[in-house]
Image (tube, rainbow, N blue to C red):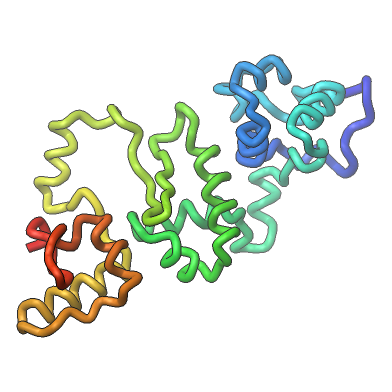
Length: 227
């Protein structure tokens, strides 16, 4: 890196923040072909070949300009340095990924509340995580709508037989968020006891969208699939 001064600070303990880089690329509408042309390194090889030592300073500056950011923002502490940093420090996208591995399908409002995040933090983390997972090496994809956020498997990785074998062990295809499980359990109890359903109004469309409520009837009732 002799044609331009390196970014401020010691880059010997730095690496490219690939998650941030891909997020910025998605926001700037840059394709994998564009990124390969900018860096000279195929995006599939970035994990092992894209480092501050392999990318000339002039190329780094051109990449930063294309991503409308600074060269410094494209770098992060290396994994070795991160292990020596304060425990528990992680990006919002990483925390979101860990949370979705814990609970499965969940309503975005419930998740934001559980993580103690304002809604815009969740939205920003979901955008970053979706961009990070949208690569050939990841078996996950992120589904994020107004009523649900969850991880799903890339189609075609499992055969129908493999998937059915997994379900035959007693596992279900999807899990309920804690709020959904509590509301459905309360509804089942009151239905069984012949009591009037007492679901909050804001819970009804959420449960209906999950096929947990019967599609017709004046009063909320469990969907036949639930029963």
